[in-house]
Image (cartoon, rainbow, N blue to C red; front, top):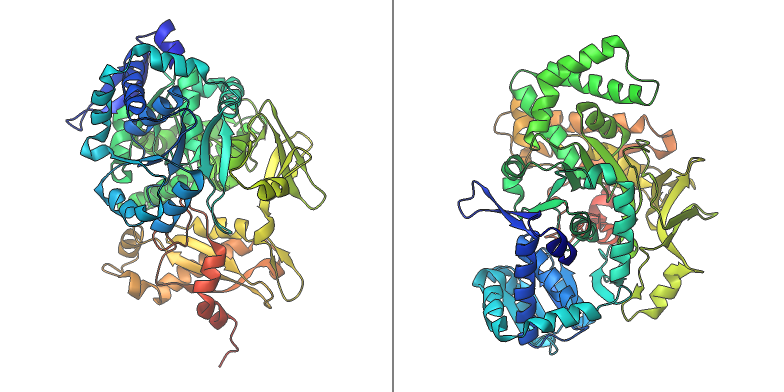
Length: 579
């Protein structure tokens, strides 16, 4: 930011939704630096010292980025908190990190914190964005000398602690990953070089809608500031399509569930409009066209079909995403070859990557010049990958975290001889592309001794438009079964297209057509595995897995232990003797 402000002050780095909600306002490098420095002086006036922790709990918005950069500018340490976090999670993160101040977005989050504030004696200050607290900080900082921020920014070293980001907590209390400025900078420098066609092209721009509390979005924010790519923020999924149309990004970052939803929504919209057969034909063309790109290129007939499909279907899909999107970076879970080939076939190349909070997000990624759909790509420059004898993926490199905060035992357990043991299972092919096959702690061992990784089956079943979440069970049991939840947003469209208008979620759970549809999705998934690994029974639950009920982490991972505990009776019923 500072370098752009000095070298090219008029370069647009951020676009903001204007007050009218219908247009975008540009913030150039000079303006961004002015905003950041003004808020930084406010933090100084409030007594924030070098290395002080300051928690940020907010949706993805410009003020998040401002606070992050302002705190970095004075040597402080931002600690992100998901806006969906429970009171217990907020208390733990603020307490464990030792945060002396906290920024929250709105009065609802203020209420969440107020309920536990008596247990946080070190927390001096609480600022609410929507109550105008950041503006008040700027006003209070007006008397702070300009040189104060300059001096404190100059004193920050790359090896200094930049942030503490807490893991999802799927197997216990979240652990705080200490990431340095060099973790972000070295990795963003290397990733920008490898992804130059995505982030360094003239006009490169992305709209951030993933939570900035997640390391993935935070890393992309740093990449944008490093490369000068324009970025924007959208905090509300309900306005995402309108925001994409107005912002017109050239690349996106998302998790696979977003791509599944876009595909499923497009398919059902086409079906409802009497164009279902056309959509399905176009989807097959996209798939065949993408596969042909890996096998000598498409022939004359396929090129002609692709041109027709583009006019009828693909151009409309690209327009939904703003019309200029050429690339998307996907992480967090497996996208699957079906959707990978579909999106590349319509003109949106999804670059799957792999990484963790402990690696400052990406360790491996497919790149425009080196892509193998179905894998998570090759290691980034400065990153090393190897697979242990038991199949566990081990990582080392410039993005590797410094330590778990105040947890030397966990750090020693996770980092062995300089290699981080990810807990994920994978395979490296001879060209260096990594394929993630499962997670060690999630392995199911059936009564027959068969080891099963549930993730791939869950991904395939969840790809069906009617399915919201799926968890495969069967540990120490004679066969594999599945807990399924319905996607209540997609249910009305599906029901209408099947002559079941007005079908409620409660009715759908036991409706024979819905059961048959879900069985079809499971039968399709079963074709990819052996009989011993196949799902023999399933149940549709009356409650979805969500962050609100604690069955999903903020990064949308299943909290398996809690689900197993809460739904023990349901699982036991799946294995009860018939009759």
